Length: 109
Image (cartoon, rainbow, N blue to C red; front, side, top):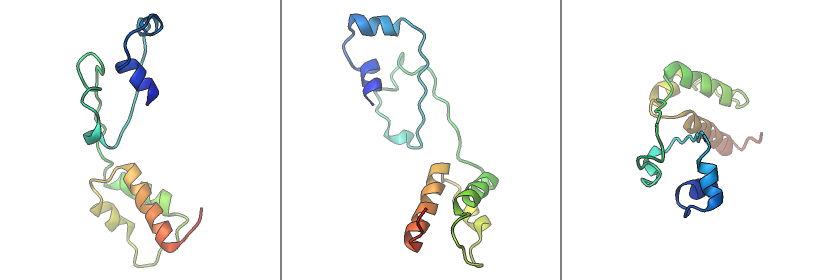
């Protein structure tokens, strides 16, 4: 976060002016855009925001398969049904869901 602070909030110095005169590509990602500070999104600071939608059902199912492959799931666990019910989950959310299952089942990596 110090880099973001220096780029956006610090008073310009000779060193930072020289840095800002160069072409810099700043790339960031979040699955929580609702908690971004509005100061970062002011015009002239971030030129473009690209929205990447949540994964579709097939992709969610694939993500669940990857993170559940070492979890001994019962015959009654239907990953298709879970993928269907998690339409607002990001990949990170699905990974966390599988981690919670591991914690509940006390499975270590």
